[in-house]
Image (cartoon, rainbow over the protein chains, first blue to last red):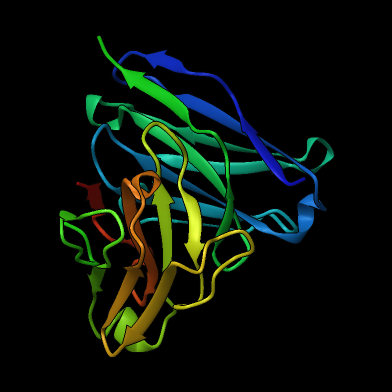
Length: 116
Length: 110
């Protein structure tokens, strides 16, 4: 079955960077785009960006432009999301989600805590 | 604030019908983009509930239905059950912002 498994929780200092991985299985990885969505504690879902798993094209939310980088490793069927210059407001659960018009499969989420 | 507006909370008794609205604008829902709905149970990832305004993915009970008209969309839940207690999010696309989500609605089953 289709599955997205994300890396474990992270604790980072303000100003640092974090890189979260999302390993896909159960389908041909390069067929579908992968998006990243985050959710701060008690808050709404917030779209961050996406990558074409096929050709690596990316598009980012204006809010995160310049701070977020999404990459993929086709040999490992894995997508990565790196967020830099972390601040306390970036404390959130980060989800990867496969895009099959719309998001039909989600990862389990990765909690990133930014604290001094 | 969210581009798509949802009521913060709705509630109903078991067996009742509730609706959750999702109001957008001419740059998103009104521009013809589809609306999708997700259910998020406490402590879990969102789950696709309705796609393409009104299509239920396999496994979603027919108690859940969606509709869209103009710049708004609605999710209806009939025969309310205790396990329906969750957060519900609408999602669409925007000419400027690409993917957009509603602010979420907390459904309480009384």
